[in-house]
Length: 63
Ligand code: SF4
Image 1: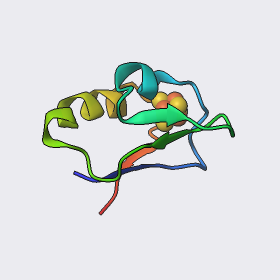
Image 2: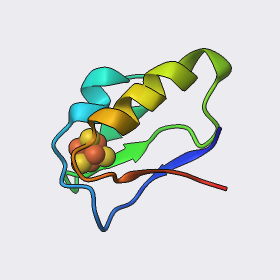
Image 3: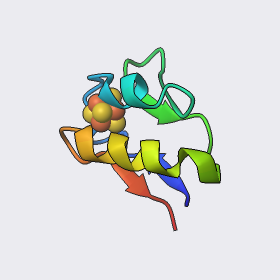
Image 4: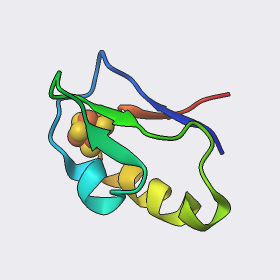
């Protein structure tokens, strides 16, 4: 599973980083980005949770 944070729709609420701190972090811009492109197998569930809690649907699967 590959992911990316859409910088156009992220509002920097920090919910994704709260749920999956190993994967997401807020940048100096105030917006979130994924620290990894390829999600490790043992983090897939928590990333799916982050996708669910993101209020703007900014976390996208990267094909
Ligand atoms: S939960 Fe969504 S809107 Fe909030 S910081 Fe993360 S990617 Fe951005």
